[in-house]
Length: 54
Image (cartoon, rainbow, N blue to C red; front, top):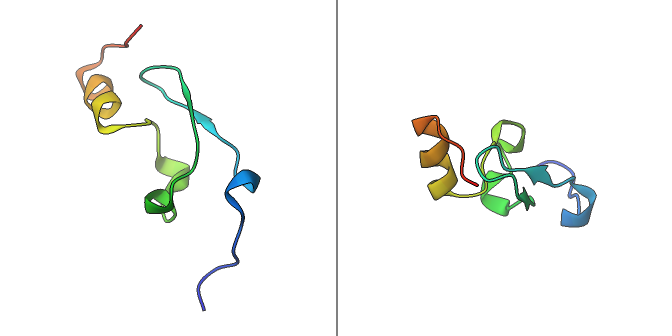
């Protein structure tokens, strides 16, 4: 049996470090939600370049 099931609403949303928009938990991030910093692959690329979108 895997971990305890938590409804999506019980997991607090985060703010994207690249674009500043809020984003919520996704199933594909279940194992590493604590390390997720961006809402998308595009924002991940922006963050790697060191620039911030506005």
